[in-house]
Image (tube, helix red, strand yellow):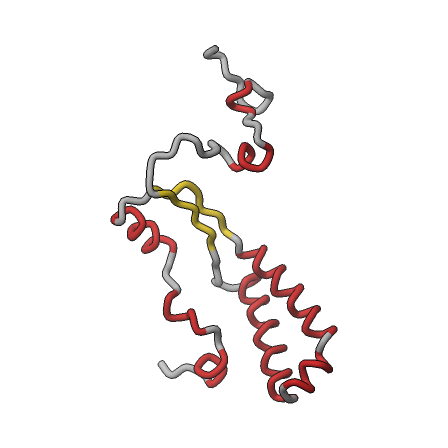
Length: 132
C-alpha cells in the first residue's frame, strides 16, 4: 500500500519503531525485565495535541513567516487529524513502566507513588488490613 505524501515527507521519523503493546510485553519478558505498570495515555495525548493546536493558532503568523502557507496548512491538518484519531479512532499510546530486578522498595500502587502513603499498608478505608 502506497503512503500519502504527508506520511512520507513530514511525519515524525520514529514511525518505523512503533510496536504494539503485546509485542513489547513479550520482548520485555524475554529480556528478563518485569512489567510494573501499563497506562493508556490515549486521551491524555489527544488533550496534549489540542493544546499544541491552540498554541499553533496563537503563533500562526510567526510560523508562516518562518516557513510558508503550505507548511501552516499541512501542520494544522496534521495536528487536527492526529487529535481526532486519538479521540475517535484506533490510535493508542501507552506508558510502560518496567524494572530489571525484583525491587521491593518500589511503591505498591500509583496512589502510594503519588501520595507516599498506601491505604492498604496503613489499614486505611480502601482496603482493611486485619493481619497486624
